[in-house]
Length: 233
Image 1 (tube, helix red, strand yellow):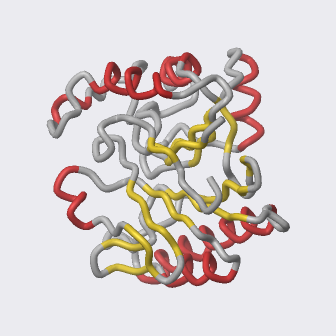
Image 2: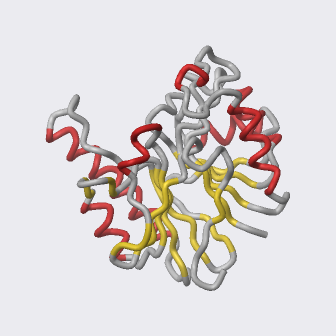
């Protein structure tokens, strides 16, 4: 049994959003994802760090979820900035049950466990120039509350690992609110996506102030889930 993570699958089996036009290895990326997931065993867990489907609704994303269902292992999903299909947890769970999608769980104001580690996280946020400073502060505060709820749910776990869509650090940017919260709860690892192409150069990797940062955008990791390492594994 092992824990993996990958972000930004950008599936579009039920919508017209082919990724081939973006270059950078995205051509035939569904085949690459299928091949990459072959290393997972049925009992393994893979966290999908947002930007899962281009569908605008759950119904439009159904074929994408069926593709994920066919991949080996249990999947834990969190929201990305392009997941417009995302709705309430109760509606998503009901939709998955109705369509016999059994291998997908939802990370939202909660946590999951793997051995003695807690899987925590939320979408995160980057200050967006299209929003006012007050709007950016409001969105960041909401994401911090969601992360706090997730970390509080992990009370008692020997190890806490956080998964985000947006990077809490990149180049000269630092989201202090999220990083301070991770430090408060003793988080040891941080996995994130969102950055693509030239954006990979902005990624922060490695150990910084006790937290190990890892970029796991699909195009960065060759469309292959990356094993999550933590002390004792």
